[in-house]
Amino acid sequence: LGLKHLVNRGYSVGFDEGLPSPRWSSYRVFPYKDVHLDRPSTFKPDARTSAHVTTSEYVRSGYDRGHLSPNYAVSVCYGEEAQKETFLLSNIVPQLHALNAGLWKDMEQRIMKRYVSRYGTVWVQVGPVFTPPPDKKVGRIPVPSSFWMVISEYEESAHGLRAIAYLVPHEEKWRDAELTRYVVSIRRIEELTGLDFFPKLPKSTQDLLESAPAPRAW
Image (cartoon, rainbow, N blue to C red; front, side, top):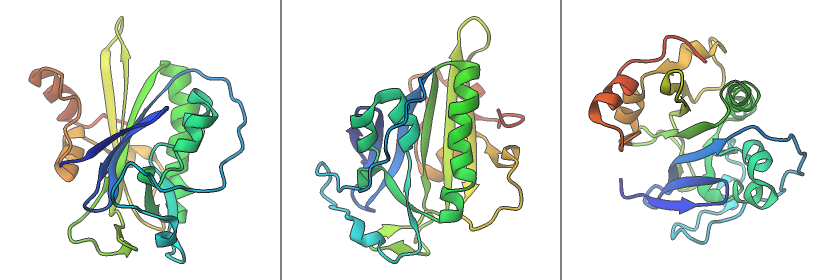
């Protein structure tokens, strides 16, 4: 996809200058102390990109500036400076408020409140799906048709590497907030995005991990 890989203190991004938008963002979380940090008040352009996306593109658009790697998770695991970097516009996509403050927020909180306590270290990859040509744009930025999340954890003594994928439509309302409804195979996310997850694993292991959806939400 020719993405620019941007490495930050608490997360990484694959940024597509041509869209211009992030295609993916990834972060790792682990047991943490719930320290309250004030939420930064401003989003900032990322000087490492040539697209020069600014907050003005979102003004009166009807869309939130939606984080891919989330403010809260990065702040409690990596600290204040890392938290500020989640407000770089290279980590932001147009997202309907109903999703940003609803089901998507619930999923982010589920990772921190349930998965971390259950599994310890958890890896999260997250991103948008774009349907060409895009139905809508915010300034120059295409509005995603859906959002995906791939979550993995490793337990050597038990089951080894496990992963689950979710695909959530970008809608104002959902017929069902039950997460099992949105479980898909990792291969499906690869087909929709052109990304390759777990490329360093042997093909047989990839096929086992990616070809079938998890039977239910974690």
